[in-house]
Image (cartoon, rainbow, N blue to C red; front, side):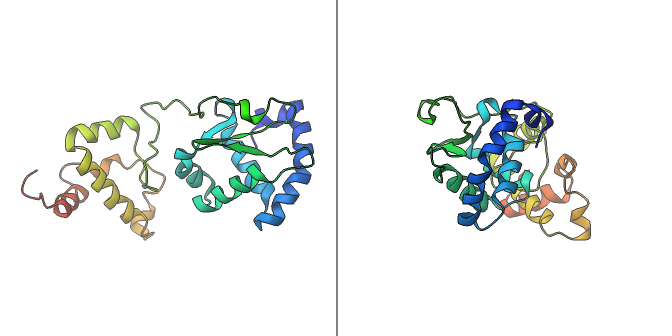
Amino acid sequence: MSRKFINNKFLKKYLSDIMPLLSKIDKAFGYSASGYYFSIVEIISSYPNFKFSFSDMNKLSRSLKVPKKKLLKFIELASVISDENKFTLFSSDRDCFWLNFKGTKSRKSRKEKCGRKKISPDDSMDLDSISSVNITLKQYQKLLVKYGELFVKKALEIFDSWLLLGSRETIKYINKNNYGHFRADGWLIYETKVALGVADEL
């Protein structure tokens, strides 16, 4: 857990208060609830109001190296299993979930928008359904201008599938910036043209 989070005296007290509740969730979840909880809080503690959008679950899944379905199941349980005072670790709505604190206002009055970090043009993109490709927002925008949205989407799918092969060749490019593979004379652009049936048009 982040040093900023754990050093707060109020939060230290909060953590000791929730351990019995984590034990209850352990039994229902079948895995170590405390491990999941602290890992999730480590990430969402840097978001406004400790709120995290469900639309960013792929990013959370990759960061924690935990399947998305398992994370969603844990969050669901942690949002409904309560202690004797009807306190739950998380609350959620259709769009996001957030961390609850004892002694704060009722979760029903928490109407803030889902927290999101401001994305810098030089930050890596969180690409829907693409788990391994690593390019920045600025680079992604350049690709859209150069090739168009449909072409870029297909190229990302092809390259992501290639990275997921896990071979000696592909593993070298995991967690590294992959923008260089999108050059016009490279194999990826050629394979994308073939896949879209436009090999003679671009």
